[in-house]
Image 1 (cartoon, one colour):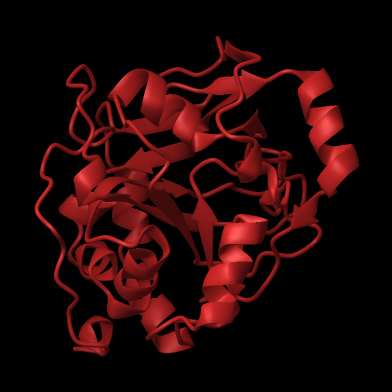
Image 2 (image 1 turned 90 degrees about the vertical axis):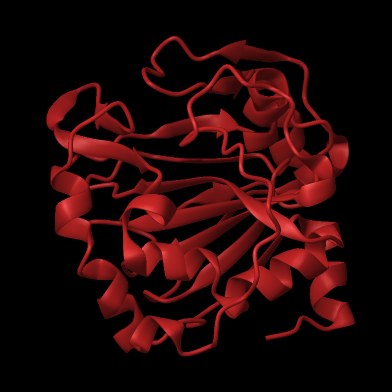
Length: 260
């Protein structure tokens, strides 16, 4: 898969590029087979919802611990576009599953920039990283879709932030209300919605967040977060599943790797 000039221009301008149905139903089924094991594992890489201890908020490191997600991390439909967008070879900085369960168990995410954490905590020098959000469930208007402020990445790293004291097992820097109000008034807010198998390529500096999921339907997204090899992080404080120290450039697999 190759992006054309208009795709790259849209990403550079808006801070994201949404491609519905990039993966087939059969490929998503392969990935979903590993979800029960991921959601039943224990360890520091598993983060629970603070208000619902039975619910999982995040599972880090799936690209190393599960074969299907290891293949997804090297899938050409992700790797080639990401390399085009950062103009460099890439490695996995971090992967995380956000299952966002229904009936109010899947909690909200305050407005933030991922680069805010990666720069301040992991020593990522420049915003040459891309988050890829792979929809494992249908994401609709009612099951707490991911929301973005288009074009907000062009404002650079926002300094008016506060460390989220509710974040346990990960780091998050919340954007203050006045800054968000200004950005939203200027750019608006878009909800990312589409069927399972859709993918959104997100600039690491785009402002994004989501509400809690009060619908009866889960909204599961797997994030593969890539960094340019030339932009390798210098920090060593966090564990590998937060800040991967293997900077070897990833080589794409065959396009049918998930179905083999």
